[in-house]
Image 1: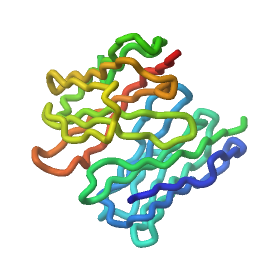
Image 2 (image 1 turned 120 degrees about the vertical axis):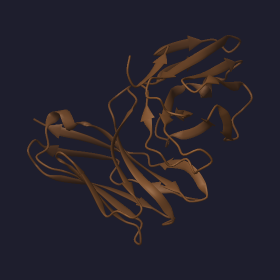
Image 3 (image 1 turned 135 degrees about the vertical axis):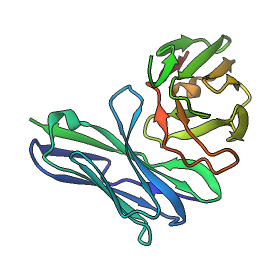
Length: 112
Length: 117
């Protein structure tokens, strides 16, 4: 059974710093991995989708990497801003079990 | 309207009530999902409809009953719920290849916050 872990559960950094969020998964036979952002009381917004054949994806200040063999993905946020404060979730889709398995998220606070 | 829209945004109901959550997607997608999000727990998949057929029923209690009348609309009918069913219920949609794996990028609605008294 796939398990997705995100550590730390919460992170606070000063505005302007670069930061990395971590996601690890136990079953490396994934089809893709998706990063989401969730603001308090709101739904999830898709940030980046990485196919299993890809190593990374970039969107603006965000860069997500994928290392399937080690079961890890990172989300790099450059030049952080207070508006980046949210909970960030990663989720994977496995071959043969076609549904996303989510982590519990990292709650990010950017301090002005 | 664009994206995925969920109504109501907030719902308070007693244990004997019957209510429904509604989801509508304006993205032209062919698969729709219900997820449950409880505090400090990962999102739990409840139901999946692909091409209007239910393809996943993740051991959800029968007091939750989904309905997908067409590819744009999804309902979750609620009956005799328990206080532990209080959670944020999220609807999502994706575009899938017919007969293929459900691997498309998910787009979520804002959620319906349910409180069962």
